[in-house]
Image 1 (tube, rainbow, N blue to C red):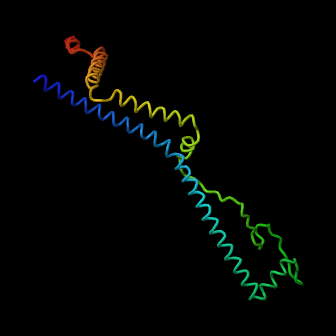
Image 2 (cartoon, helix red, strand yellow):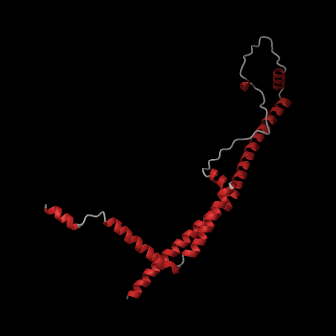
Length: 198
């Protein structure tokens, strides 16, 4: 009977050790994966931003081409538009015409296109600074790899089922110590009975 109870305790501690072992291995694998995948994911995000910037630039250019196509069509087929453009370009004034000065951004000029203009894209990723540190800071990368390797070595060294007796001993001694510390602050039932009599 005692042997069966001891065996059940040993198997429950073995299960706990096995669970802790796999949790530690998962943590080590996650740390290793963060170091390996961070530069690749950062490159992916940069390429995606560049793709979106190129898409915005393409749409802008298509709009500008369409606008210039309409202007060219109007210059070819609309004589009144041609004369108006010539008058504006040569700053000619018709007799009796009154001009109102406006700011330059309100004038009817064709906006100049700058091909080197960078289109700002906002990155709403909160983890981008972390990715940059994991990708570029060699001290952090080395430290995380060292931590992952240490976790793996310690897991394979100390967390196997043959260690269940040590875990049982540690658990029992911790439980006893916590019980001892808590018992110092408990009020005994005898004391409560004496207080009730008075």
